[in-house]
Amino acid sequence: MHVYAEAGDTHAGDDAHDITVPAANRLNRAGFEGDVESVIVSTRQEHQVIPRIERQGDPLLLLSRTVDRSRTNVAWALQYLTQHADTLLT
Image (tube, rainbow, N blue to C red; front, side):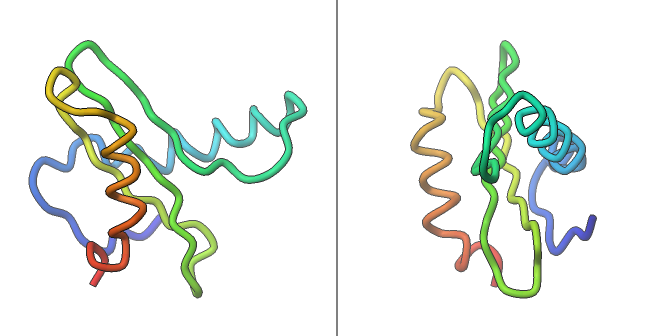
């Protein structure tokens, strides 16, 4: 796994790859077809939002953002990360 950039508290981002790849493998073994588009892990205080971003040169590029559960709409956070991936990664 390559980390291209970090900002703020990055404790959860270290595990994004370790969460997403096994989840995708288990879903495929259970009969689901296709690629995992995103993974959301929720705790009592936070959501870790991990969208998969399609880019040339990177077979699997994950963004990870940890957001406050009580103040964030997780669907909007996922949509924002996905829509603004190019801006976030440059």
